[in-house]
Image (cartoon, rainbow, N blue to C red):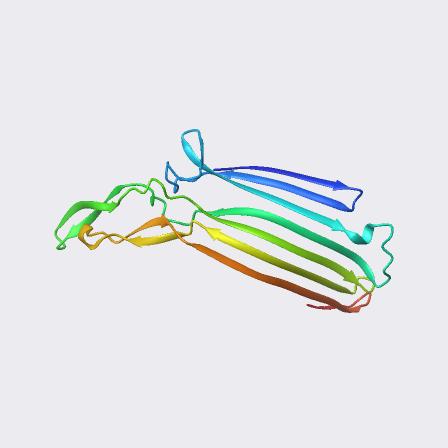
Length: 196
């Protein structure tokens, strides 16, 4: 279940601000997940986002002839991931067949009441530009993200007779950039050709 809140603000069609947040819960989370909000008897994760933009080309002082549009952007957001088994945080029994003759029950999972979502915090800075009567479009983004509380499968001790269980552990960091370039090579009335 998730609740969303979003707000957008524009000032003079030049300065933009977007605030958003989601509050999410899942039956895959443990009831005592560390850092979770407790509401209605379950654990919730809170994931905020803020994005800002400045349309530089709308400023009265901006008089650069070949640039039709120039926008700078920056943002920060946190997202969550709950991609684990449905009953990873619960103890349960499962049916097994012994020697192809009889059925029985064995412990299928041991409760991990503290398992929770993994969180990815991401910061990004970018620009968008349209040049030469909107014939050339350029977009560039730099980002850095850090994922914490990674969802991993750990091995039970051999003497338990069980396989693996889900837990949180480890971190992952990514840094990089993305760029795109699109050109309108032909912009006739009956024929258009874009290359990107």
